[in-house]
Length: 291
Image 1 (cartoon, rainbow, N blue to C red):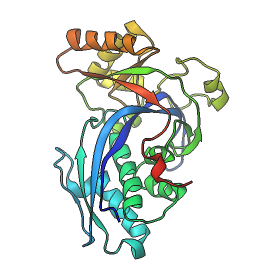
Image 2 (tube, helix red, strand yellow):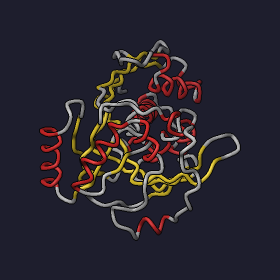
Image 3 (cartoon, one colour):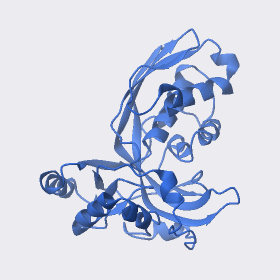
Image 4 (cartoon, one colour):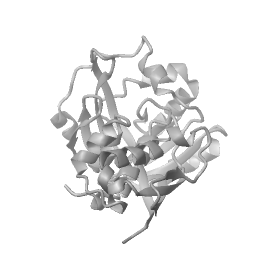
């Protein structure tokens, strides 16, 4: 029986568009978006323990172990299947590449990878849908990563339908600031009544479908985001992902992305971190989950 599961990817996501279409009575915003997986992200490593303890053995600056979504995900899985996991535990290490407050889904992706990997390592036997329901308790983006493929999303982001997205490369700029999600969504200037679209509207459109309703607020509150959008816009349809702060632009060929990436690194502000990533169709760990 395997006791370790190393090099487990937790991929980044982009919101190819993000519309705020309303607000529920409980205050949660109703959204429409398309989630795009990237071949760039964090990497997690799991070693089973037989004493029931769950430990994060890597220091993550600014994230206490007990509040880390990785640890919370592991403990949530234990509570969902107590008979199988009473003596199961894990040491979890992480190679952290995705920024906090970047709109790339880093923490949510880490949590999803933890649920997928430990469900396999502990032989818990939960289905994909059961894991997605657990993931929603941790955050609205977590179910998407367990869903495991690019998706048109509605509701608070948990109502998912698989969708085909263009094959392309993305240049992503981390502008050197963190955009707190709560600050963006609570801003009185946020558009909350964008007309709903249909999945077929996106499927028939080009790469430039829709907009990100959160971008206007984020660029006003955080000028470095606006600077990154303006700079990247000279090469194509640049926009912010999620509630920020990262900005991206799509390119049909890798050499086009390489040229823009080189320019960003040579001419952009010192606080920028720029990288490229390829669009992928499925989560790299999809094979570890059943239907």
